[in-house]
Image 1 (tube, rainbow, N blue to C red):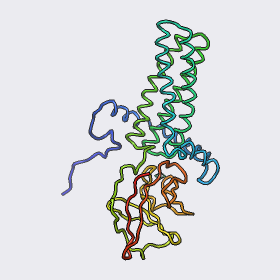
Image 2: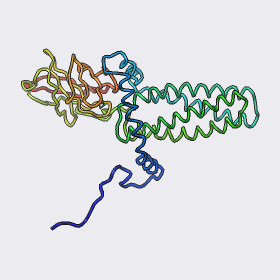
Image 3: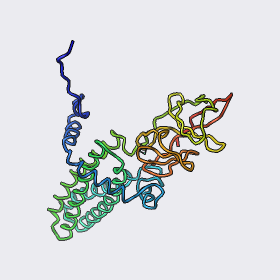
Image 4: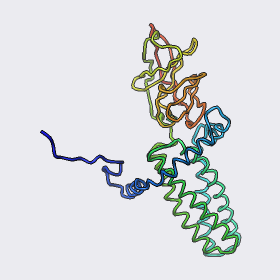
Length: 314
Ligand code: FES
């Protein structure tokens, strides 16, 4: 018998419970309705991607450096602390100046404004290289985050120039407004990272067995073919290259892509989602967008079986 009950499919998490906390829900609801951001994001992401080219080309090395491969850590949150700290100091110095109008305090406030602007420039570049490999809600939220930060930079540059021109009180009002916008933008940055997992290590919480686990017959492992196996609940990818067998975690540390569905060339496995490269011999990053090494496994063969044991996380 046909049912006359109709259902509405939720479009995003804002259409589903829970309704609290209301500020987070309101922010997500706002972004859900800002589809115009996608019209900016798509061509901008294409342009940035073309600028850096492909892994192996020289410009891509710059992207690797900006993402933080050399640091083994996402670079953007490190640099973000500069403008946030500097402009917080400006606020405090401005408060002190408003009560005493001390010239030295004013000069120090000017210096922290310039420091914040320099840090904001570096943060913007590293943020863009993180964002370029996102899509969907993260792409849209990142675009809004960038536009808000760009507005803050313009407001604070204007405020700095006004201070130099002797218009200190309206300049303080402007930079204080910019600080409030910064707080919301920082909240969005936190959402992207802490809630949506952009820039975090997607294999950080994979445990695994401390004992060797038999995963497949050695005779079934074809040379040069990426092969996915289960190691007591943890997916790993195996490769037989020459006389050696290597194994690393199959879940890409960047955003969780399946490495076993990628390609293998010259000792490196490339993720099918955004092209991160990892050395199969030790899990280290060959190229970004990933910056965190893949967990690796100790390997032995016994009675014709390949056995793996998870090693400590890099
Ligand atoms: S998930 Fe992005 S490169 Fe692997």
